[in-house]
Image 1 (cartoon, rainbow, N blue to C red):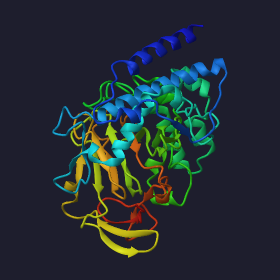
Image 2: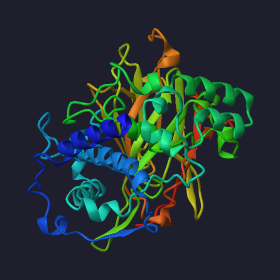
Image 3: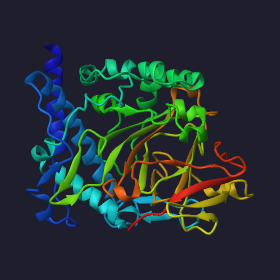
Amino acid sequence: MFILKKLGVILILTNLLYGAGLEIPNYLDKKDILNAEFKCLSEPVKYNKKDQKYVDILWDETLVYLKAYALALTNGDLNHCMSSDEAIYDTTKKDNKMCIMDRRDMKNMVKNIYQILFNKEKAKVCFSARRDVNWIYNPGGELQEKSPVAKWANRMTFEEFFDKKVKNKDVRKRGKEFTKNFYKMVTGDEIHMPKTFPYDVSANSLPNLWAAAGWFPMYAEESKRNEKNFLIIRGGYAYAEILGHWGLLRIDEINGQKVGAEVGMTVQVVDSLYPYHNHAMPEIYYNMRMPACVKQFKSFAIREDNPLLKTVEVNKKFRRVQFDAGAKNEPDMWVSGSAMNNSLLYLHENTIHAFEVDGKCEAKPEERALVSVWARTNAHDKRNDYGTTLLCESAEKPGTPAHRGEMIQCDLTNTKW
């Protein structure tokens, strides 16, 4: 009974939060927002009265998350942009900032979020806890212990996943360390929202969403792709999707138009390099960490039309390019960011990018990570294989990871438009 009362209080608080003072901004057409019609990607899931209480908690925290995200993206109060946050894009250039809402894919995503927020009951038909999906997991540990929703969802935990589904002993060991410290990585004073966010959407404030969204350690299992990956990333990276084709809220169309937005969160351990990679659809990251030292979080991004890329092969599927990551000025091509500075990164389609996190300045590096609000935007365009992340490789030793300081080689998708 106590738990149910506690859940009821949370429901009231979250209802007040996402429902208070939200208006349709001038840049959106009310006719597109009010009374919007939704088509789901799958059949609606029906829950009994007992289970529905937990689903409602998860749903309410989802709406809180999405509202803050839309408001942050369209907040131009702290820069020169009109109704837009400012984002870094190609880090190899000096003039590397843009008003993110100038992009059509971003406008569509924000409009879709407003359509959801102003038509909650219709959108909720497309929402489920996805307890039937066997490839997303609960982080477990203290995060799960403090979430009645995660306990109810009862997914396989990270600990069980690394025990049962991961063959590589080193990856398994690193994954268990990642699991052990996951709660400390996503909570605490080091987690901090970027300035454009109206309120906190981290695990500090939305514990059920972060515990029960359904996480995927996407590089941990054996695959041909992972021969080009680093063991620390294979055991120390995971993401969760809230809105999107693989998430909790799965919408196919709104008002007859395809929904391509995927919104969620990512966690990457410190002392790691997320390898150079690319994909055929745009992607964005909001950094949610206060740095322990200057230049702790560094991002690299180079667009597909950058003259620093040398084309070495072209076929019907891709264009193979090389980049000299050992160039003398290569360190200047990385941009430092945190929750307080350069917090937003926009990656155009086929942008080669990587993330390096320094752990030397952390008192307890095993307990810390880079935590981000993450999104992709054009998941509906299946011609461009939205689900594939292509890892780059060493040009000298193809099939092995691409390191800083050497010539790297990447395959860029021939996108359709």
